[in-house]
Length: 376
Image (tube, rainbow, N blue to C red; front, top):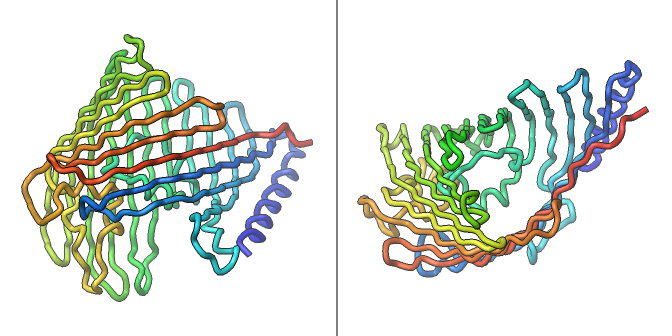
């Protein structure tokens, strides 16, 4: 039924726009196919931050639509698609369970001289967001399973800078479903050949529902400076990133006052011949203090309130003091084609001097976005 509705919607859009083409506007068919395969073997038995498991699955996201160029440097597009996903080995009662949700969005592309403006409105792939966010914001598993954003995204691209701001509406007020939305933003600008200053942040509103009242505010900000000496050396990448994570959180009904977890994060990445290492070290307090709390209905906050890697909780126990989390990654990212991205990674997690577990990850992405010739 979902596929029929999407096909009917796309056909109606095309018919209406082709009719308008008689007015000699530049009308084109746009289509895209995005494929992801992800193998992520997680061995976390050394700690209680996250469960050991293997995430192994594939996603196909085809889309089709129409683009209209009403004036030079401005393009309007309407796109419809479907998100198809399968967890390997999972039993499904019917083929329709492969269909996650439709994508339906409007896209504006505008050349503003020295700046390019891009806008998305509707249900669109998360990959359209190009901001730099720490793993404290969004974990790998969230980005794989929650593939789409619902709301609005505006992007500004300049020769030496990039900024974005968006709104993701995650939950509609209901009997048991909480009203949830997030306003997020990221940006950075090059101030020297080797120095970039940037930030990322979000304001997350975790409101109540009919059965459970109460609101939890979750605000997170991350200003940073990145030094990249790759062009001055024989390395593809030789970068250092120093940032500060500052959160403001308040469970209005159960706590009634703000808690302010914080910490410093230092990243280093070295890449040569498409092989590299990346180390991220965080020193600070538990960035997810309400993770194991429950609301009045007995539902654990957990990943409903926090979207980052749970290792940023820093301590296995209820220790409120500062601690250190270190993430060390070895990766191989061979070049195959401009359409294909393959990455093989081994990731090791440590808290203080304690080993917390590891991941072995293999990911493959194929992306095809095209605009056909002008319709006649």
